[in-house]
Image (cartoon, rainbow, N blue to C red):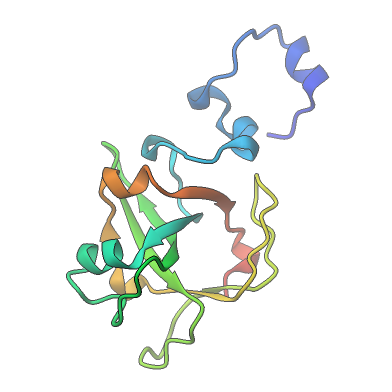
Length: 148
């Protein structure tokens, strides 16, 4: 929904709410509650140690203290659960097929620019715990045209 401020106020609505106006407020959102997550949303700030635990020690192979990685939402579920996949800027040689987000991609809603090609490691998908979700920074929605 593309709407400027004048059009919005002419509608006579007095309150902007996340459930009713999510697309309108995403541009200024930093921490987004899981109940509003959608497919292809991209977040940053997941610590290696936490990802290592969430993936039953499968990813990353080498845990670096203080290192963070992005997460890509594969499928939001009801009751506040979402399936996510970690991302990496290193080419995953062990996997024959891997989707990726192009470097320079401008994310929807925020205009955030992806600074490196980011490989979506859906082989390591997991249901994200609320405790981790609350710490992630919302960066935007990845347009389909940016996924290779």
